[in-house]
Amino acid sequence: MPKLFIPGPIDVSKETFAAMSQPMIGHRGSEFERLYASTQPGLQELGGTTRPFFLSTSSAWGVMEASLRNLCVKKVLTLCCGAFSDKWFDVAKSMGLSAEKIQVEWGDAIAPATVRAKLEEGGFDLVTLIHNETSTGVMNDLVGLAKVVKSFPGVLFVVDAVSSFSAVPIEMDALGIDVLLAGVQKALALPPGLTVFACSEAAIERAKGQANRGYYFDFLEFAKNAEKHNTPSTPAISLIFGLQHILGVIAAEGALNRYARHAANNALIHAWGARHGFKNFAPAGNQSVTLTCFHTPAGFDQGSFIKTLKAKHRFVINGGYGKIKGLTFRISNMGNETAATLNELITAMDDVLE
Ligand SMILES: *Cc1c(COP(=O)(O)O)cnc(C)c1O
Image: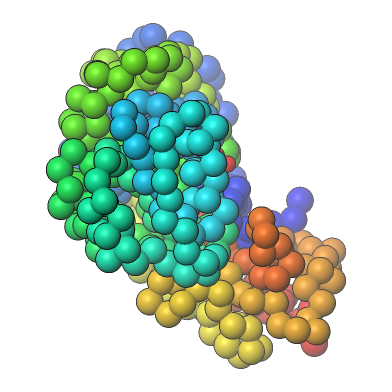
């Protein structure tokens, strides 16, 4: 099979697959409780929190929608700067919630001052942010935005760190993030199907007063079960074995080394782009370190570049997402990649360009 350098799902190592293919265990027994408990210190370190991490057998959207259902009582403000963040607004509307958005051009980042001005209008009790907008390669200023949101008491802050979690430091507790969520098929380099998330005490308190939370995505069910190192319903146990494995790999490398490796690998792709005159779609200062989104230059046959790279070298990159499909292309450096594996990709891309 060709190797994926798309921004999720990404390449999964043989060792991870091997860890996932252990004999099945029951999810209401001590083996599962030990498995669940073993994931907590690693996830808490990556998320900068002492709060328990919940394991949701769903893709990220399950928890993104659940955050709205559990926490939006009055009105949600969605910060929109690309495909995933724009859709969060649409989802809020489709649930019948009162919702407003701040919309910036795709390729731009959300400015904290704009958020402050909007929240000053009043009436909001929830803000959603995509930390790393995977469709545009923009990494938003999480620290600056958190500071603004936290200065409005009663406004909870939900952060999608799907394509940044484990690749950059995230300090949930210090920043006052109320829900931090990440799908495991991005920088954690697991197969899709599981989302990890943590909730602040304030988020749990808010959920208590919320009617119609349902069952599968009820934050209070997750919290109650987490006390016994368990999940509300039967989880994707094999994926949790995979999670346990990858957290061990991360601990062995060291989180700080992992962050530095992502930054260094991303710089290799930036340098490759600069050599060929490919311009970054994201502005300097807000460029993701887990993927790179390039403008497609006029006259460059992006489709045949991507096709030949796959046919000849068995590497897959992505041809843009949503309304900038074709106008941009994206290369991921998330997960287990090294300078050596990225240089293989770069050599192959150079060969195709010649
Ligand atoms: C991939 C992605 C999602 C969607 O994840 P699913 O697993 O498809 O639900 C959401 N947010 C961001 C930032 C993503 O990169």
